[in-house]
Structure formats: C-alpha cells, structure tokens
Length: 574
Image (cartoon, rainbow, N blue to C red; front, side, top):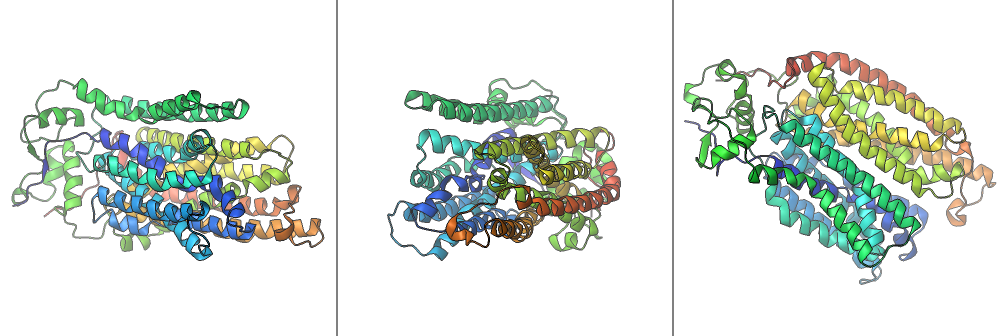
C-alpha cells in the first residue's frame, strides 16, 4: 500500500523562493570576470590572447550543467548546493593564490581549469534553486523563472557594488570574497531550499506576493544603477559606503518579508475535507500542519482506478504531480507533449530541436555583442565603454523579469505560447543588429538597450517552455542542455566570426601590424559590420523557426491553460 505524506506539516514555498534569490545572485559570479581579468593580465603577465582564452573558460564553466541537471533528479537540493559551494571555494581559491602571489608561478593550464571549475558553480547553484522552485510553483513557472533569472541578471551590479565600495577595487580581495563568501552563503541557507507543498495557484494573495517580489527586484535594480552613477561622481568612503551596502542587502532580503508576514499574520481558513486534504492555499496548509504532523497527499494506490485522480476534483492536480515524481503514476505509452519526458524521449522530438535552435540563435547572437561590447563602443568612438555594459546589464534584467510576467499573463488569458515572445524579440533583435551595422550617430545606446531587453526575454521564456512541453520530472537535464546554446553561440559567432572580421579589418587599417603586441584597436563601423549582417540574417531564420514552433505547440498550451489556470495533462494510472 502506497501513502505519500508530507512530514512535519506542510510548509509554504515562499521561504525557499526568498532564499533562492540570494543563491541566484551568487550564481551570477561568472559575470564578475571583467572585475579581475585585468589583474590576470598585469599581475601574472598574460597577453590579451591568454586572457581571452580564460574568458572562454569562464563561459564554458558557467553553461555546462548536464551533471547538475542529472543530479537534481537523484539528490536533494542541499547536496547540489554543497557541490556548487565547494566548486566556488576551490576554483576561486586557486585564482586568489595566483593573483595575490601567495603561490608563485602557477601554470596557465591550472588557472584555466580552476576558472572553469569556479564558474561551473553557477550551474550547480542555479540548477538547484531553479528546479526546486519550478516544482514548488508548478502553476506559475513563467513568473518564477523570470524572477530568478532576473536576479541572476542583476548579480553583476551587486558584485560591482561590493568590488568598488567595500573592497576598494582590489582584485585579490574580491577573489578571496568569492572563494569564501559564496560557500558561506550556501552553507547558511541551503536547508531552506527544499521541496515542499506545491502552490496550487488558488490563493488570492499569491499574485500579490509575486508582484511584491517583482517590484522589490526592480527597486533593487534602480538602486544599483543609481549608486553606481553616484559613486562615479562623488568618491565614497567610511560610513556612507557601508550604509549603501546595508540598503542593498535589505533590498535583496525583501522577498523574505512574505514568509515572515505569513507567519506573523496567518490567514484564517476553514479546515478542508479529509477526502480532499490538498485543497486550499499553501498558507492555509501551514496553519493546518500545526494540528497534524503528517498529511496524506494521495489515497492508497490499491483503491486507485484509471483516471480516478482526475475524476474526483481538479484540486488533485498537485497530488498527481507529486505522485508522478515518486513513481506512483505509471504510463503505458510514450509521453505526449506536456507530459514528463526522459532526456532520450525528448531529443527525438522535432519541437525539442526547434526550441534549441531558436534559443541558440537568440542568446548566441546576443552574447556575441556582449563579449565584444567594449570593442564595439571603441570602434564607434565611445570613450567610456563601461556605460554600455551598465545599460546592457540593466536592460537584460528588465527583459528577464518582464519576459516571465508578460508570457505568464498571455498564456493564461489567451493561451498564447511563450515562444511567440521569442519570435517578437528576435524580430526586434534583427532590427537592432541592422542599427549596429549602419552605425548611425546617436543610435548605439538605443541599440544596446534594445538588444539587452531582447536577450533577457530569451532566458525567461525558454525555461518555462521546456517544463511545459517536456515536464518537470527531468527538467534539470533538459534545461541545462538548452543552455548549451549560449557557449556554442559564443564560440561560433564571437570567437570565429566576430574575432576574425575584427582582426582582418584592424590589420588592414594598420597595414598588417601585429595587433597582439602593439595593442592597436580597430576603428569605424567596418570592424563589425559584416558580423552584424550575419547576425541579422541568422535572427531572421530564428524568427521563422520560432513561428513554426509556436504553431506546432499551440494545442499544448490550449490543453494546459484553457480556462485560465494550469491543468496537468491526462496520465494513465494503474
């Protein structure tokens, strides 16, 4: 006889989401590479080509997450977070030993491996919090993905604030901070991020809670941009700098106000019927959990009949979701779109590869601009290129957050597939690449902002789309495989295409001078114009394939979201 229980009473998923915000910011440590890359060049005597190859290690480690994806189905989240913390400790620890000259003459290959391990902590940390929270909020996947990826996008500004204000632009101290600070954070909150009673979406306060988290993240983003600009105008020091950091910490802690409020002011709700104990909001379940230490989430499997979980009441959807994860629900046929796929079952589907290529085009072309943003600015006559990175980072954050919110709204009200928004943004990206190519004076900042928003939308729409098409059971593996589109695009479009075009034009301008030794730069729109034309053409192709994909999966979204709420697909039970 099978009985699924939730031990220790039901607990709301909001505690895990509030803690996940901190982990997601820590998981953005790969974005901090520009803060210490100059020290690798000056202190260790590397040339630009060697630093560029270390940048490849940075991107490679960040995006290779198949192992964390597999582990997310076999081990608890705290263990995955522990592995990520140890990767950060050992990886950044080796880099700190080299930059601080605590250990002299570490070989280059060792530093390359150390940086790959350090940034691979992103994959472990990000997978742990994303998979856990997507399963804890199965009916609000787009919103959750947008929030977590939004905080990940703004992590670069958080690290920059710490680097410039607290650590006084010291690369060695910053690497020590990454080596010790990230593990300390993970050890302190790892047990808060764990599976719990999934939110049903029936709680009327849930939408307000999500809106509060979204607004607090926007306030944090605006605050970081404002303090960065202010610190450049007026040098900060002493107590004023610590006040700024304290305010930043309070803004990051804002999502934890929701479980605090739920604890101090619990809602009064009637006790559900014994025959249907999973009905009601997660907040009411917490109150009920005070009276009962264990609560059955499924009836005995011996009394189950085919389809009985769906014939009783729609509120049993959450129980079926839990049962599928434990193996109580058995399928006699191959899964259909919307049900749980294994990795091998997913990779033979056309929709899987259509989504992979669409995402690969979107983020691969976008990261090409991001990796070459400083050179693009110099080529078009911008003296301070850090403003371009600030604009791109903030707009990337806005795109990630808004992509989740907008797609979630329209998928519920109009059953519009999330890939529709990938189509729209890739059309806009085509326009932005043409703006970059023609380099009309005064359009660079607008093009960077436009591209940053579109780049962010790609992430926050791809993630819930994977879970909706192929299920949550193996979501960690499938999502991390899709993420390989980022480093693959960076290698093809940035290293091979943009790098070759730039070097060829620079050599022509300097009459074949050895650019590596001279440090000469390429000037003018021709440095990147052929690259942008190729990126524009590729984006057109991506838009066409995205349209095809959207039409193909429209019936899936109608099945899942008809009636305005998420509906689990029918599953054969025995």
